Image (cartoon, rainbow, N blue to C red; front, side, top):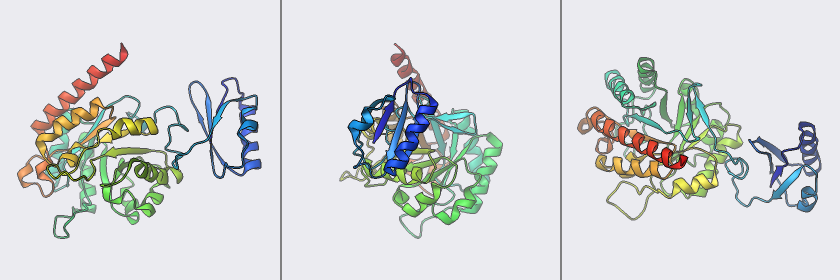
Length: 340
């Protein structure tokens, strides 16, 4: 249930009203203070609450029931876009555009540092790289694991770029203490025990959409993290599995505006995993920005033909530079249009 309070409501009135709801109806009350009004989100069994009684209170503007099973991720509970700060100087969400760029897998210190320097020069604001790699084949390269994390930290020290890397299991959380954004991969989107543990930490989580997940399932996975107390969730559309075989996955462009309508969380798009082909990364990235994405996560490798994983979808630093220039130019054009 959502209760929108009048702008004239005093802090004391809001506190008394909130306490009454908790005591009389045994519900949890989340308060969100916006620019124009205060919104109360009631979580629990609200079937016995008399909406007419609530609506009749002096400080109440309006009240309505929420049918969606996700509450904390729901825009009805949180009308304004969520803005997530990274290291106090970068904000994801609220109209900004960020690019997370780097190799699928961290392979060596020279490789990751060189790539980090090149993508930063092209405008990337985050360094992505896999230390732990979930692979379809048990014989494929599985990543450098803890050593890979150490190499990412070296690259961060060299460039200042915050790092984004994927976690595989809850027992690894302590190893990710110095990672700036923890990525949950598509295969782990419904690893609910992992999501619960990530809900207990104060760190941004990049939650990728599962290969065959519906938008509601994706948002419910975000809800698992947020229900644990961690509101710093960034959603990542990376393509879904369809009957089409030409591309690795099918990028669901429509998911961007749909999620923006349903949720207040930032949305990042991964054109690399969606396409599986490097030449498709640019048009998909442009489409994502035009559809309202808050950022992109793009695979970049200094020698794609010899990459230990996903070389076919990786851009060279030179290719990435061209793509970055185009998407930032497109974003500026969109901002100009929207300002008129």
